[in-house]
Length: 242
Ligand code: PGA
Image 1 (spheres, rainbow, N blue to C red):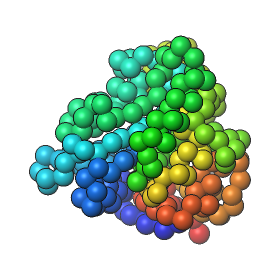
Image 2 (tube, rainbow, N blue to C red; image 1 turned 120 degrees about the horizontal axis):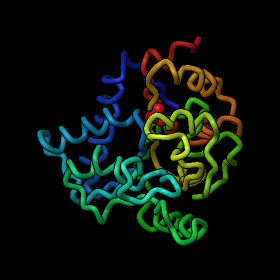
Image 3 (cartoon, rainbow, N blue to C red; image 1 turned 120 degrees about the vertical axis):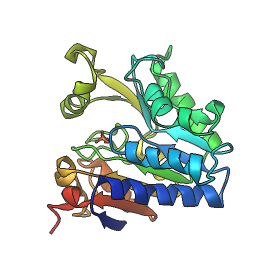
């Protein structure tokens, strides 16, 4: 794992955007694995600017997202479909039919998982995967205890994840309890992975990750088994690393 320590959130976002744009420049049909959450918003802002002012086109790029809440329709204000549309897809020239996110209200969640895994296999391999990290070390919605060989699956969100996501919902009862997420094995099939971490709240998770101990207790630690991972971390998130 290559570790790049930068000053702040803006620098992390710019550094990540540089790597994404390099990938898209060298392969106009690149498959990007994308993430939601507060972490990649700055990256996406940079990509939007690059699309508008630096001649980077996404017209033949494909995007596969990590996860979606179960129980939220595509047009729900807190769905990851809405998040991606608002924060990136509607502002760049990517074709809607080239964007893939699990269906949050499938007839059968199990079938949706199988189908989504098949989509990733068909569209992929993912050339560049963007990841955030949860305060508990989760990647995608793979919470502690998720096996390293997991593929797309239904996950029950932990209390800490529900609490982190809670402020986005009007009432606690509305916070989804389950999600569909690419599994750890699915994520590790990506050819290159960029893990982003910013802010003091991620400091424990980064400290734990950089012990290099690979364990189900820390899903992000499986990234040590991949040979092309770059961690871009800001000083606040890096502060507990000796
Ligand atoms: P955040 O979430 O970007 O909103 O901090 C990251 C994650 O939980 O993966």
